[in-house]
Image (cartoon, rainbow, N blue to C red; front, side, top):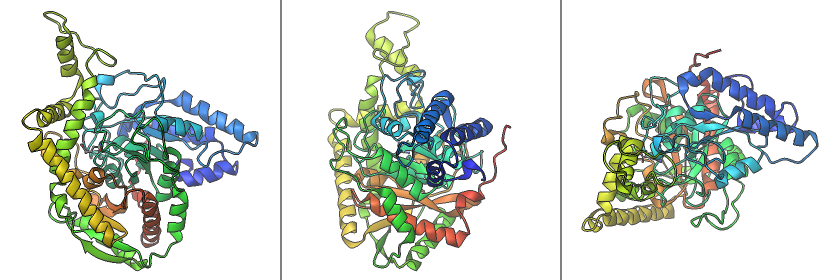
Length: 504
Ligand code: GLN
């Protein structure tokens, strides 16, 4: 991809600071690209042309006056539609919130605005972030820019597809069980789930509060780090926000790109990579592992036996928390309200009619499952047991990080599957998350970057996991691997994407 939209966020920032381009030009180029390819990709639920250009113009005039601006000032960004934006529709991919205009900005949106980043629009997602393909969006699926008959991953397929299709240089996603990393893997992009509590959750429509975490989507490791630097940090409005000042992740990425990894101990998680993983996905993983060895890293195999139960525990904990978080959509306070067409209009009947009409099949499935798991008499057997498994997984990670600095695995077991292939088979859909879920259950950070092209000539992902609060290690090791991949591949993987037919 050539021209302005082919540049990374770091490159755009460089040209903006040198005053070789204006933010209005950069933002307009991305808006033009959106207009040209959205019919095929459908990464966005809404595009904010006027607002984005207004912010761009303001940044340009401040720069012209000689003001010292933040690193990414003028670089446009897309935001997953689960993050609330003042005066701008936020739906979380649900009919329940169709047309809802929030009265406030999420903390991370305030941070983007303070950094002078024009917000291009809100990206598509599975309803309330439940899914691995975006097919559970109430507004139609997003398609994978590598092959538009295939899924872009989920729930944040819109953010990943926008970045892969060069509609945005950067996007914000959220990751409760893999919704940043699995879409990154299947679209050949980079996605990071930060340490739990390191990016504010204030103003995120809650799915599962003990797992939810916002993070960056990009085409390079450095770009992800630059965006993480903007959206991270302590927020007094989020009771689970980590205290303290975060390190500069962009510095870690820049240092990593030059680094020799001698002495780095890398653990391959034995449980993540066997049965159920495509052969091509495993081969590409091994090749990237060899690049790490070539850079000086010591690789050992590490056992995490409790990971076998991670998926089962997650699919009890998530529905339990979701059933509680989604109880507020009752037709009374905000969002959709449906009154029964026959019989009396009682509170219960309005709630039933609203929830019946407003939630899609997957949301209903999880609400029912979660309500059941939390009910008296079943609580200990299901939710209580799942929480014990969660502790065992945390202990497996703790034991593993006693031996190694980072852990690695394929990010997802397969490359992108066809639209329609798994949408009616919840178990098959859930199995996509097998390698991403352990990080959420333990609260640790994880990064996915491309490992090459595997089955059907589609991208596969390489996942790096680090101990809590060691997000900088992800950027350092990720950038070191990326630099070796660039040399081995003769350029970025994303450049091998087939050009989309453009509408103009
Ligand atoms: N695919 C997972 C799920 O359906 C992950 C969701 C997420 O991270 N938001 O729950």
